[in-house]
Length: 288
Image (tube, rainbow, N blue to C red; front, side, top):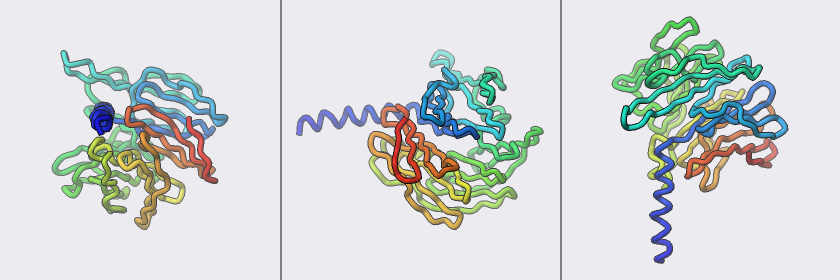
């Protein structure tokens, strides 16, 4: 009993430490079948043959975006320390050719402060982001720089991670619900109360319970429940199904469905370490 009492405080301290730097959600696959993902210290590449290598070194990015030409985008975010209490960032682009460049130079603050870069984009290159408050506004920026309100409503309660379909529909998690905003601004709730009421929710906090979103070719949306250690699939009709589970100390934060049907999951541990899990269509798995 005394041994168990000693271990419990250590366990909770280790878990709480991971909350300080919340996990990344960025994982994408290009047309050559290469996987890119973030571990918050660098961006890794997994070749179709399964070889791992560093694609972009020394960058702290939570999200990744891949355009139609296989160009990869991310950011580097940093905190200067308590003396200045300032944040800074720049946005980089890894060309399909392998050339790396900074498309937005280093500047103070966050991307959201400038309204010129979001990694939530549709096939036409439109960018989307949320301005939280009363009301919450979902903004849209076209490739020519025009900014408009896609949706403005008091009905949102706690907007978190977002994704955009190729056609320009925006999906987001809102206080545990999955919401869809059509290209003309209509808001529909696809599924309610997707959070898992488990011990991990109290450790990770509500904001990290539901994380990355992605879609398959049939219009199904997948939600990574980091707190619940599982992935849920939501059909266009609103049917919810658990399609994958992670085991302690791992939890899914992002993912994608490959053209061959394999499910690729980005997983972070309770100690903020990272791995990628490939769940093949026939059920076998491989860890990277």
